Amino acid sequence: MNNSPRSVRGMHDWLAEKCADAERLERCARAIFSCFGYGEIRTPIVEELGLFARALGETTDIVEKEMFLLSARDSSQAPEWVLRPEGTAGVVRACLEHKLLQPGTIQKLFYMGPMFRAERPQAGRYRQFVQLGAESFGNAAPSADAESVVLLYELLRAFGVTGAIVRLNSLGCANCRPRFHAELKQFLESKAQTLCRDCQRRMAKNPLRALDCKKDAEFLSAAPRAADFLCAECGTHHQQFLQFLTAALIPFEESARLVRGLDYYTRSVFEVYASGRDGAQDALAAGGRYDKLVEEFGGYPTPAVGFALGLERVMNFLASQEEKKPPQRQGVFVITLGDAARNEGFAILQELRRAGIVADGVINAQSLKSQMRLANAKLFRWAVLIGENELNEGSLMLKDLEKSEQEKITRTALLEKIS
Ligand code: HAM
Image 1: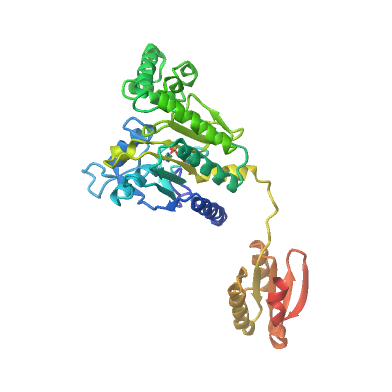
Image 2 (image 1 turned 120 degrees about the horizontal axis):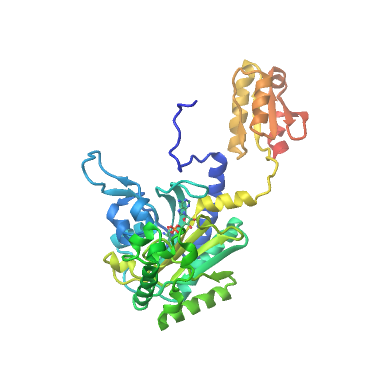
């Protein structure tokens, strides 16, 4: 056992129960995305390396140290590709490649799929994880920021996440952010001795990253706040965003320290936490506005806002809330005894399945006892027994494994009895 192969750390197999849970959430999400007018987009898992450095920023944690790099077999060549660490950059790339962002159009897209980050694995933080994301292009109005948050909140509500809380902030725009950056840089420089190594290094290039630092969190509480530097347009945008959320009855908190770990954001940023659980790794979802990214990628100036939700984090949260229910028995296990009964048993099995009933059976020479053991282990509700007697009589023995009762029935009465 000890030298059997294992999955890569931070990457997990999903067994049947988890797949069924995920499928339920994904189905539910599709219906909600569709109600909000979002169409699906699927982009490749592998993208060119430069895409993320350009979109997320050279000094972000993801680009500096969390990307899985790929190169062709020739290891002397520098890596060219990367396993996507997030969905937004690929969606913007695809929109431009397929000319979906013409001036004046609104484009709303959703995606679901695996993302990869070479993070130190821990509870709720994986190296492969699934994001459900939504990106809305072409609407600069604060109603679009609010729609994005409302959509996210509706998804969580439909999944059964109650009491989620939205934290939000505004990072300003190209007009007002430089003044905030300058003040922040000055503040950081005055504390340079106490800053951690990462922050010291990043201070000059990207002072905003320091606000995201967990190590220096305590003394950074005195740092300048983006909200105090907003220009009139950003201030109005933010107030209207909050008014829309209030009108839509979305519970939110303003959070001056929220800066997000990616550089493409302008104005609104938000994160959603399950109530009572607020370690940074517990954000169930996050997003914001990124009005410059399309243009930076060579497209027409196109305002944009979106979010991504971590499916595993939501599933972990739901599992932690769920009261342990006793396992539900369901379906029919067909047990045959003796050579002659096997054809009949096999035919019954297919008949049940065709009628949409969960049915199984081994249809082989195993003893009654071992077939019964399988039926119980797999939590079937019913066992149908066919031996030589039943075959001759056109009957079946139907056992209710939940109630420990049994009765002899005619072959034709089976479907009616179990449905
Ligand atoms: P993000 O905050 O990096 O944003 O990730 C969004 C969500 O993905 C997180 O809130 C979390 O639920 C989940 N997530 C992130 N990393 C991990 C991990 N290592 N393990 C498990 N779950 C994780 C983005 O990715 C942006 N693209 C969101 C966005 C879309 N902004 C605008 N549009």
